[in-house]
Length: 392
Image (cartoon, rainbow, N blue to C red; front, side):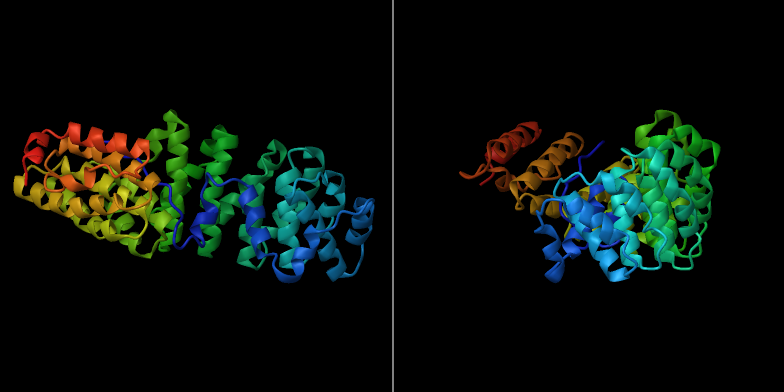
């Protein structure tokens, strides 16, 4: 049974959220803008004529602080929609710097304008490759992530060797960034990813000692699988791998947990005992504060119940599933809608799961029309709705 997923704002989105493969490149710019507080807000208020020529002169200034301020002005103008692509060559020349903040700003600029200036973007390749060998893991990861975000074929050719090194890097932050970069590279050139063995390296990362690396490897493999039916066989979970993924759940961020739970839900247990163990490890996620984690846990548990024949075990699990489903129906209307769609799918297979919870499906006067419709469909779907009606 394929369950939907709630799209909610995570309570702790640091780290993994920034690396999700579906995140747009402009999230990097937005993140940078949020950090521009206090004195940096002045960069968004300049509207003078001839400021492009002025910025070009300031970018070429040997004074590091003036150069950084000039690049900040360019990034601010780019963020509000002003075309500053004519400064591409000048900004690229600032890449070779030891200042991490300035390097981040230049990378943001490159991500935005590399498509429009592919020939000039090649000028940055040598610096990218050099940065992937930097002693600072933050710079190594930043270089690999930026090269993956720049969707230019000529740069993609130079990305393979640094990416292979990054996947085996000693620092977990570099490895987890490289894992997502594989999914981005696959979207650009699937044949290249398969020929260079990147999918095999992602499979190896599933056994990594760092939970964040494991979560990103799962996310990347899931992204690859969803975009190509021909590579679906590349993401098969062995029993030993499943237990390692379950062990990593406690230390992952909530979005990492979502990807891991969703990936395990497609795993067919070898026997009834294994299915029970998987359900037991996933049950604590039913109490999670994030609705997406709760729904992914429900999806996993329902899928594993198919391999259990003992009616007493099934009934016991059903009693554990009811409270989190009821709790979801007290959230915002959008989350209620997603929860109700999932409930409609679950009760088709297990109609007794919410037999004692008829009141949660009563329509309130301020419920949106789409929520009322799903509530009515849920009651109609129940095979025991007649018993509900006469229950005092």
